[in-house]
Length: 281
Length: 231
Image (cartoon, rainbow over all chains, first blue to last red; front, side):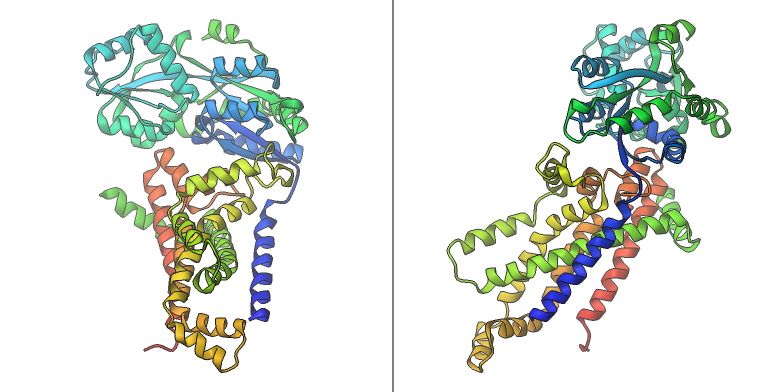
């Protein structure tokens, strides 16, 4: 019994050692980011290139913008890539971060069934939501404090409507899954253009409202300060942030998606301010 | 319905074409979950022996705790482990968060109550006279325990299978403490969740089919061991 027990223990420890071996190689940087950058496939292009250039190993945690910023504030991430301006500014104001720099933008679109039951086609974004609420046409919200959800809530405010009731449903899921649900229910929803283009299973939906500075969706990168928490890899975080606004990364962003979707999913914006992007958009 | 059929076809295409990434994910899933099951057995069997035959105050209470643990949702286990492993947490210095080791720890915690609970029941179901007879014949405590365990090997292996089934199929803890990082901590279940969130339902289902095929293969081997020597 003793001998066998020792044998079993030794085997288990060996196995854990082997399992642990998958984690070696390079100092690691934790990137907390939004689901839209991962779901669109952009990070699959960017991150391996950074790892080759820098020797760092990146652990990408794709969550809603709210959670991504919270992870940064706690010092559980070294760098944050998000699209939730108000929450980002809070993080900077709290003194937990280094710099907040513009990386790229795309835009939000209001999508809905081709029949357009609430007659929102080509309306202003806020007016479109008001019409959806007045018609009680089905609308699927992310409901997950993501950047897209935060944007949606601000737009309801602009529209002067309090969303709620049977027509307003919260999916609590990522953008792709939310588009699929809206597709199945013949509902309206708000999506970033990139994920909408990339989501094959939402082909019954059409873009109802697009364009204009109001619908701009700007992504910022924020490196986390060393004093945000214990064991923050501030150098690694800053290296990734620096790289994302460098010409090498901006070139990748500029061409990403052209081959597959016939148009780029994101527009590189390094060194531009939000105002400059708005003026150009 | 088309999606279901597409998923089955896609699953076997991925398996048979030797798709590198798919097999890498399968290997990682098996390595993590088998390690966790083995650890749960190593830790759980002594616990179950103590619970089955020990005479100590609070034994029933401990048994009730273990039986409750069998129903703990993986996402809750994952939350507890992640708070412990956070950089700011008590085990932060180890730097284990978002590693395969973290996933092994979380899955061991999930499998342990299952293994300990089922094993306790397995050991208790052996006729108590049997162990007394062994001891009367001069066998030591450990020797007689071992003989009882051999006698109960069928339900004990079933306990191991239950533990393995629970961890290979759980997603809550794997996603939380592993982070679903491509090439590092992405396993079959977390990859399926990612594909579903992208709206790629056929591929997500295909990964689910692969999971079932793999779990079936592992259980086929274990069942062969279990039923060895039986008609």
